[in-house]
Amino acid sequence: MATAMGATAATRRAPIPARPAPAPTAFSPSDGLQGRRRSAAGGGRRLRAVAGRPSLFSPRAVSDSRNSQTCLDPDASTSVLGIILGGGAGTRLYPLTKKRAKPAVPLGANYRLIDIPVSNCLNSNVSKIYVLTQFNSASLNRHLSRAYGNNISGYKNEGFVEVLAAQQSPENPNWFQGTADAVRQYLWLFEEHDVMEFLILAGDHLYRMDYQKFIQAHRETDADITVAALPMDEERATAFGLMKIDDEGRIVEFAEKPKGEMLKSMMVDTTILGLDTERAKELPYIASMGIYVFSKDAMLRLLREKFPLANDFGSEVIPGATEIGMRVQAYLYDGYWEDIGTIEAFYNANLGITKKPVPDFSFYDRSAPIYTQSRYLPPSKVLDADVTDSVIGEGCVINHCTINHSVVGLRSCISEGAVIEDSLLMGADYYETENDKKVLSETGGIPIGIGKNAHIRKAIIDKNARIGENVKIINVDDIQEASRESDGYFIKSGIVTVIKDALIPSGTVI
Image 1 (cartoon, helix red, strand yellow):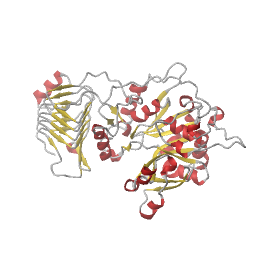
Image 2 (cartoon, one colour):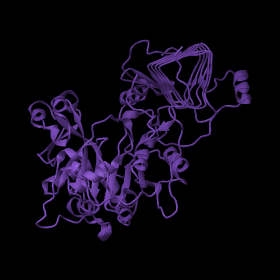
Image 3 (cartoon, rainbow, N blue to C red):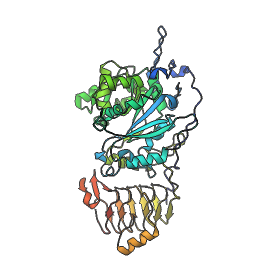
């Protein structure tokens, strides 16, 4: 029996970031760059290269290489403000977003999507973080408060994670109209921080990234805006907004989901950004990841003066910045990245962590851990069960059942005889007491969890769902799309999703 026991990773509380030693003022020759010191004074304005002393630029140095060194001066904790955008209504992730914001959707048995960008920030020494939300934000606010509210600041360190909700005011009577509009509405607050850059992030991406390297590349190229770029092949490229660069990595053209000859025209030499020749041939396109570094003065000028009515960064502000001659650079990120925008993408990303021998995304990286709320749950208990190629969250009770290639979320209770295959169980928000279960048994009710002899295959079971005995959730008719909200479930891309708090009566076949 191959058994995966315990949580995906030890649940970690957000750390108190230590103030690092001052960074050196010059880069080593191996960097291929001449470092330029910058001052945080003057509202985040940068010092330009000294006349008569040309700075050397090596585009290869802007890749996210493990071997590259990060020398930020001033360091990110004092000079960078992180801004995480909570996204829209999340209609493509419905029904997972029926009662929660998209960044609050559970992930990987123990976590939530918002933990990814927040953890990346903390691991990158970016400790001043705002999260902008608009839809169903109660659970997101609660999670952020419990996970990060009291434990990322320290003596003389003003670290924080704060939620900023959309609001109406005499100046702005509307809700957030897009990514740029959301930032613009709170620009009065952001500009109060004495920082050099704004780091703009999405709250629904799965990846691990050292933002310090990203910020360093921004400073070294003297950019106004730097866009994180993902290399990709022709097959995937048609689904993304693509960018074209010159031989210094400067973005000169954008195209949204191009096809045919337009797609061919967007091919670039990705060796400019650090890929080796072989991989550059396989991945001749670069797509925007929706992750940006803006110099503070550039952000203020763009949103207030140049494009005061623009709502979106990716389709309006950044292309507009290139047209008016601002320096917009590409930064290559050559690693795992997934936009959790659809049910299918969410399902695949979760099951990807069970892949062997190496998962798509690992929660076991000690050098860059993923933090979350400390729940103080007991270890999971497995009683005579057959568990293979699966990840089990905290506090589960798994009794005489079979689980294969699945992710089982915290507090999950799975009864004897159940079979779980290729599925994601999100678990529960609380345990029912023995008295609760007794009352349910006497009244014909169904307890939270998976009932006896239930069979679940290629499905997502949201939190607090009550699955009765002998239920079959296997998409028996191979339906690709169906809305059965009154019955407690949806089917999207052939994946059955049981709604949070839903009850599926005993004997039901889906």
